[in-house]
Length: 292
Length: 183
Ligand SMILES: Cc1cc2nc3c(=O)[nH]c(=O)nc-3n(C[C@H](O)[C@H](O)[C@H](O)COP(=O)(O)OP(=O)(O)OC[C@H]3O[C@@H](n4cnc5c(N)ncnc54)[C@H](O)[C@@H]3O)c2cc1C
Ligand code: FES
Ligand code: FES
Image (tube, rainbow over all chains, first blue to last red; front, top):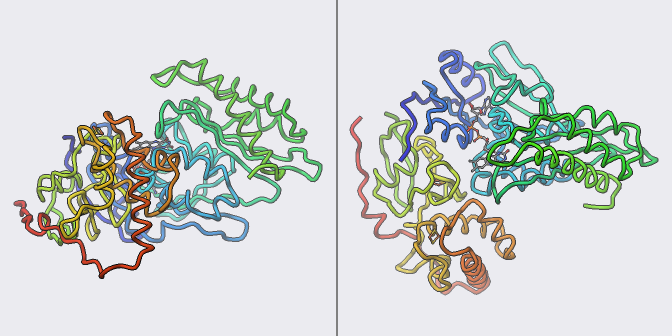
């Protein structure tokens, strides 16, 4: 039986309360959301915070709403809630594609959107999906709120723009007409982390040409989970298959996969290209009404 | 030590727990509910699955303090009036277990699955139980058992109830004393 080392435990009742508790404990405290990454790490002594601040009781961190031309997702939204949200599926199929292959239904009942992004595991799927969509994170600290594009959110493995005394409170996804999106992932077994995964979003002009594209890559060492060279290549091009294949090749060239127990680097690089192309194909088919 | 008030298998408990104690340890060691086993201890295998306010949860990865104010159902709370839950019966009848280590978690995860989808296809059952690993059965009989139980539960819901079913208060749970840990 594995048990974390001793720690103090505080239950925050509001965002401001959580920030006060964080300020009091300094960088020895950690926020606990779903706990499904943090608790296993604490059992293994990979994390030994002196205090845990439980944010599960903060209702203002929960919920999915449309406000103007943005979808707002509270940091404490569970994976299961994102997956069952009709408004999410309507605007951003990439999020539903990704959620279907994140962990398993039991973990999805607990794990949260904010916990996933703040854990910043290099194989984390939602980060890749959100960067493809051009989403923004809202971070709150004692001094107030600031917004950080998710493309600048990840500073490295397990490192984000959220300071120890701050909270990620919300993710904002711009709702733009004329586009759609998709996510593809290869995993060794059901419920596992990605060997490689790609998310794609495309926006088409009246003539069917690609006016804008977003690509996110997980588990292949892509900087900030992004593939800017492949996106740039696609802008203004007809969305024919040759272009989508070429974009995949460009994405594969620019990522930096590492060999590990999930596979050798060249296999992951191959997957990065192939999965980028497949995600793009599906996003284009959806945007042009050929596929649901 | 923090105080928690929880309902487990229909019985209220008011207990002190160490903050670092996991829910599964509280259930097994403080309440004696050893029907919930520990497998991997790292949120992968699903052996420790219980229902928390009706939703399946891996109790090796939830702190006992986080269960404060919540309602927990373990495998020990499923039988009512001396009768097994339809899923328990179906697992028995369809030979859906060999060593049985995964069975409590499998059944509780299946309850959550059927709550969301009362008539799942084989594929949907496999996806719904993705978080619960079985080293023995090869899953085929588990899928068959869940399908059979789903049909039975649907039929029972459609048929007029012979009498209002009583709240399931299993005798074992009612008799289990809450062990007061010293602070
Ligand atoms: C068996 C298993 C399989 C998994 N498979 C996948 C997978 O295939 N793909 C995938 O993407 N993920 C996967 N995950 C991870 C899963 O998505 C977790 O839910 C997620 O990593 C962490 O979310 P959480 O809410 O549990 O975070 P916690 O464990 O509570 O927190 C994680 C970290 O984020 C910090 N944090 C949490 N919320 C905030 C906040 N609002 N502001 C600031 N900091 C915060 C915590 O302090 C901690 O450092 C898997 C997890 C498990 C257990
Ligand atoms: S013991 Fe909890 S998931 Fe394996
Ligand atoms: S019956 Fe042995 S693990 Fe499933």
